[in-house]
Image (cartoon, rainbow, N blue to C red; front, side, top):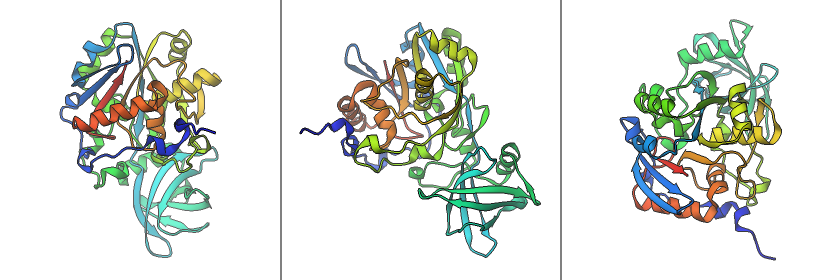
Length: 342
């Protein structure tokens, strides 16, 4: 029996020189390079992001993710002594929080941070995540109160492959121009390339909509099962306004600005919910049914994100384009260059 390579995680691997991992963004943002792949003509064009307004067909509908990255990484101490690092991931239904903790903890451990912030460990999950409740001066905190404190004491949670401490500049560099709703621990990075002038031009020339998907730490979780269908897909909170839902329902030439927008639209197209938890896994065996075009960055090997790109153009074409981008010196990952699939 032949093996379907599209279902094997190892089939989405590629070699990237470390020198092509971007550790800071292009300045200005729209001076980043843009690889344009036209599926109809099967052609590649090398250009810069600022030219995207001249490339997009006029009938294209633009969809943006207005999530806002919070200062999710905090450093503190266990009440019993010893340093800890905590990364907030997402709020849970019972006002507890899903987090990652660097440092050994057990149920009942109390963690102490600046501004009188405390975290009590409620549960230890088998996947390495932890459930905690946050308090200040003995009072249990809701999400909005927690975000206010994190904004004072926290750090921007740069992806691990950037491999440096966050800097003041990251507070703006790692945030989109239209970030509005706090809750993400990773930026929707395809949106980092816009400047105010470019965004204004695009919005004046195209119908445009926003939706929200709070990007979680699971976006960086590697696919560990060799059969991609056995990968437990992470879930992330989403909300779609009525006008955006109406535009999706009516069809049209949708450009998803990023993989998060793609997953949100495609989840809605399948289940019809305007709000909830999105756990959709797009790959060549589960291709998009609503999104016609994709703007995205270059993603990690063997990740759900490179599999999502492959859902649009196939695994082999994706790997061909990635090899082309590497050979041409494109910069990869969150602060790197972009790719537009037409």
